[in-house]
Length: 93
Image (tube, rainbow, N blue to C red; front, side, top):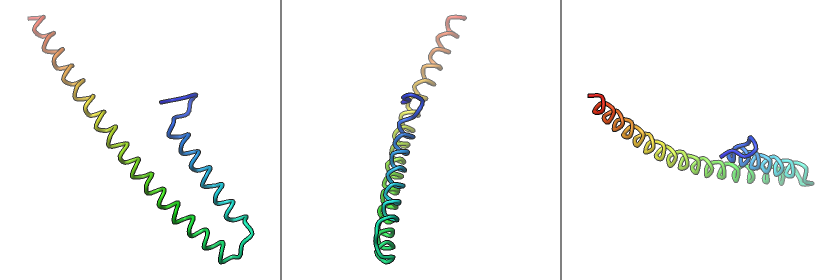
């Protein structure tokens, strides 16, 4: 689905990346000791990795669902094409 030249996926990705960048800047500019900052960065990166993994799994499920729908549509189109060819060949005989 397209709205004003941007796909929903690209808007979602921009939103996620903006949040990640903002959180990273907040971590780096907060007044903490080096050890605390490193701990927070590690926690943040672990959370980010888990969210990325979950997003990837959701994306795979989405692609699998759409692939199945596209395959069904192509099979239906092929069947309709073959029936139409058969009908046309009978008309011309």
